[in-house]
Image (tube, rainbow, N blue to C red; front, side):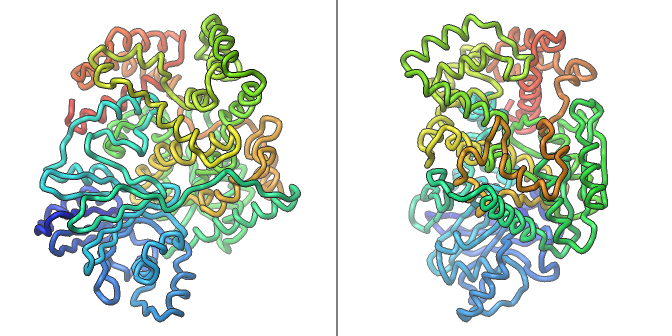
Length: 631
């Protein structure tokens, strides 16, 4: 795992100061404390920070191909690199190292762009072809590894693994994109189609850019997508056996490392499944790490201990309490962009705990998206069945009127929040799912914004690209489209961003076996009843893992890796909640109605409403603006 950065003068081969790229890489030192390097040629500079995982003594980067015609910087792991090396060796390739970086170079020289589908793993890389002066930027299928780009005033294109790498370049403009604020207030993160700073872009998951000397930079092109349009057939036993094969292969392929390796263990279905399959294939005890909370309703540590004892792991635990709120400033520095998933705090803590014992940790992320494990997906399935009973022309006025008459109940679980359900039923399937996923719905956002910000936002609404993504999905049903949007929008923007930044902040490599693309592609073809049955998500996965895990783990109510932030903001952190309205950075923007913010905070503290996620959003936005120096 590593950090990469570079500068490409596509119009004119101007010389690049290597110290400038070195400073960009220094900003990414946490991603690669084990080595660094910068390479320059006319019009191009590539920089690298290395976290040594495989071939510890070899594979320095930037790395040249054997013939010197191509140069690579690479962040990630290619899990099938040994198979590719054997295939390439049979075609005459000679290898000088024992790692996966050289395999990418050889694959490019053998197959060109067709090398991308052959790479199984997580990656973001830049490969420069010297004879043609072409620069290839590529990102893995699901977006596990990030890549930011920006066109600068000197005619160059700069790129880096994190925004802080670009921020180290003196020509980067620090101007907030108001549409990114609208996106952030809606989702709690800035999705991959935008960045918090105007002029900065993120290379989308499963895309590449081919930049050529003398030509304007080409837009990203897709090289992979997942389709929910097909359906596989077979008995439950047959499909379960196929799923178990994919699970085993995904886990074992990610256990290759020349450094200590372990796993995160929350006690939920996904991380417990990963640990079970690791224990099955490891001759030594698996190292596991878990985080608990000082609020019992959020604490899963007893289940994590149950799994750890069953598989005789070397288990380590740590407690998260409100005192950890001091880490909010560190979180703002880790993410650069505002990021309001409150589970980032315990994720950072479990990564730090893991780094005390291992250098690589396997996580359980991805199964909820791929195999329909979120409650909102089950609600979507039921609501779509109701929508199918009535034409849209009748549904909208019927359920819309009913939702306006029904009292608001933010404090209640969603099944009891009939107003939210009625609003969803009165809208399209896509709009209903966007509302279910949003932290801040359109009515609440409009009440928060000042008149000046509404003018900046114009006619844009954050739900628009999300709903368009669902409508254009290669899918059959509403559940298919919801899962597609989760995989393409929510997963890279929230879940994978959280895990990448928090793990890399402590120089830990996190691997996501449940996002093996072959597993994801198989899961997308499962009949709906194999994904959700009786309101229970991940049905086939739970049935499959019954031979490995106790029912107490598989079938207990889903908690998720969440933080008791609502209770904290009513208790020890109430002062922080009240301070949102008077925050210097937020107040200076002029984006929000200060009186409205104050009333929301007081309503939350008094227990009349639960605005904890919104308050946390605003706290993180304030910290991010202060660090970016834009407010």
